[in-house]
Length: 246
Image (cartoon, rainbow, N blue to C red; front, side):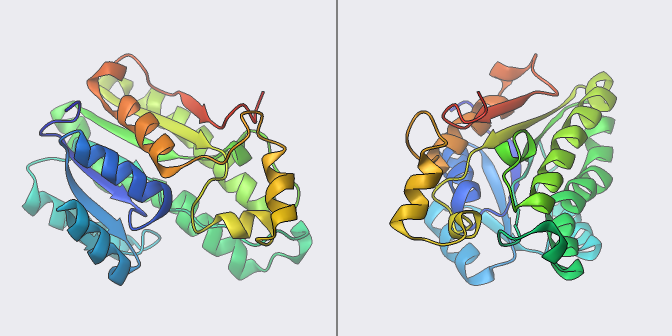
């Protein structure tokens, strides 16, 4: 019960890593507002975990403002905010990525982090406590060919994590990131450029520990960084990648 009675918002929590983090947080006693744009799946998963949910597009200022109002009614304050929602463009040469694809990637992967700061940091600063966790990627540390703008968005998230951490430290608000390698999530097929056995083996060959990451791996790492056990850790980027970045 490391997160007992703590309140948390987790974006992109209807599937993949976000669902794994939500499950772990639930097991550790947290009260959640699970956020996702996929209303049907979100309702199903939140019901399974007996947690609250809020349907939102994290690239929308209007939706973020509505989320803040909802969270304020539901909880007195939010202890933990997990920026997990993320998308990618398909593997292709950088010059062939359309402007719409580029905008979509940065609106979800980067702008959502900006919105979490704009709407939820003021209360954290006022009460002098809080934790923000950004789910980045090994792609932001060791970029993959043909995922150029996705790589860049995750690199942006890593720099944002450190910038937020140093600015918010005097207010006792910690900001960290986890950097997973591609795992068993709906985005895996897009990262690999297909779902063939050959592509899977080629991808796995880049991970020394020899397997894909799982939602549980992310849940365990996220739980530690968001718990009081990590009270001296801020501005860190924890590689949960089976050794890929070595």
